[in-house]
Length: 441
Image 1 (cartoon, rainbow, N blue to C red):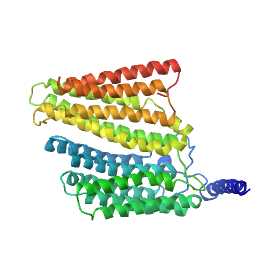
Image 2 (image 1 turned 180 degrees about the vertical axis):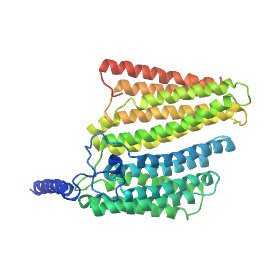
Image 3 (image 1 turned 90 degrees about the horizontal axis):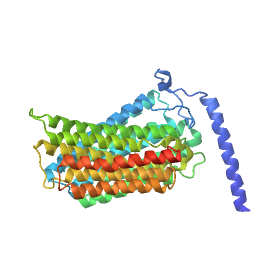
Image 4 (image 1 turned 120 degrees about the horizontal axis):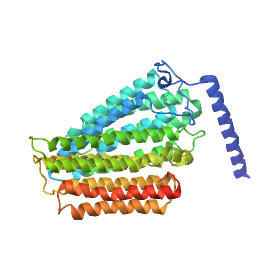
């Protein structure tokens, strides 16, 4: 009887919440107009939940500008990581940890912004100013990357993080809690967990600066960064936060493209090395051609799936979809580092004891990206053994070719050989999609 009564109570409360939500939309803001829709900067727009079914919703120019700020950080990270590998003559625990922790800071400055914008981007003056403040924090993180790789500590990165979180908590979450009473509890939970986490990040700066201590703090806090929004802030709410599946897919795809742009910059270094000194460097030419073909095929494989449609069918997996992009985006930065290293070695000015290291970095990045692509597919669509096995076989083939063939031939030749498994995978997916008459691959 108690269970039935509780169930009936929840049903009534949910119906009341739905009625209240509709009333708030009618009374407070009948037709919320964002600046990007009208072309006019609006002084104030009530921050109520946006319509998750809005047609043709796309990123605003403000959001794209924010992405470009994150791109600067990714470019700095790639360059500093490459230089650190050359200086240390390969990977060390410190360099590997620094890459992970710095990319975590960059990515976590972007993901909460996207999550909030999906629900509340009214694009008025205050929203734009809050975004500007967070851009300052992202740039401060970028400026602290060099110090982190050279052993100067991660104070700048953490304080950049503080600036981002202050603007995000008080001008985003607290404002939404005030102006959207129906989801006040949701936003206050988000603000609370971000505030606690940020205090812990600051506290971690004042412990003994050893690698072991830094790893322990970072792993613990990184785990909480990923778990708390899903298991605490977005659970047991009377009304869920609005989520626009196509907008979310669009935003994740845009950052993916921006990171692909960083790879193109590395490829351009190989092309410049090819003509440096007046003589044609054929090794650099092969690296540039192979890098461009690999990037093109990875772009093809990633964007062959309509993630927006799949998220619309399975919105409950939106957090998993977002979090899978963390390692996926990291592999794109790693791919850029591998091509950059190969280009520098081909120029002759730099050297590594393990000359096959650039090939292995590219192979690991390509292989990992295929694995994460298959995880996205499994999460949003389900098990399709043909698609899954084909991607795993291609992933293992890339790793085996790099490790077995790499020491026997040049860097450029190895990278060209790595194109073969991806080319076969695309051909297999095209034939399979034609036979099954489905675009979901």
